[in-house]
Length: 116
Length: 111
Image (tube, rainbow over all chains, first blue to last red):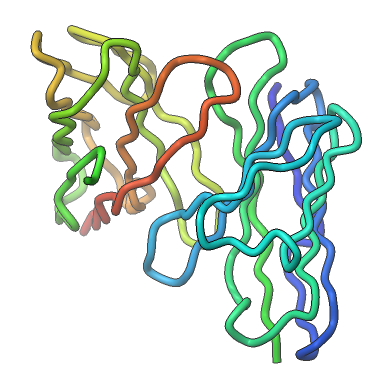
């Protein structure tokens, strides 16, 4: 149980386009989902915390207008990278916690974004 | 101020026991210690979590001294497939609490 999926797993786009990444909790309800970004050989950096039905909380330095997060249901959160540029190329990972109150975070497999 | 400090990298050989120590001098009373494993181009995978003393599961053991200012992840008899980055995190054990990842330890298991 407690599986988190991401779609797409890999995306290549042209500079200036917008890319949407989906994060789904497949067999549980997730009140809270998190979005991370990871550059090569580096650790995961938290971008934002997404709570179902409310606005996301962004970490310092993360532009909310560039990285749009929508958490419309207890099983789906989306991250849209608007007007993507090559410097946005990264590995984007989401995670989710159970609504039941347990603290363990379950991570998705990640999405590799390459902006040409 | 970093919440956790780990060695950047470690090398080991197949069949050996590997111990990775993490320092968390500023751990709070409500914080739990959690270890994750990450393979290249994959999301992190939960390994083990503990609050104090010793915790053991089917893949690892976690040793936490009384002062809780450090912890040691012990991997028995590692194999090549254990080559990965291991992250130690400390966080309040409440749902919805954000995790702050440190640098992690890159473990290389050699044949």
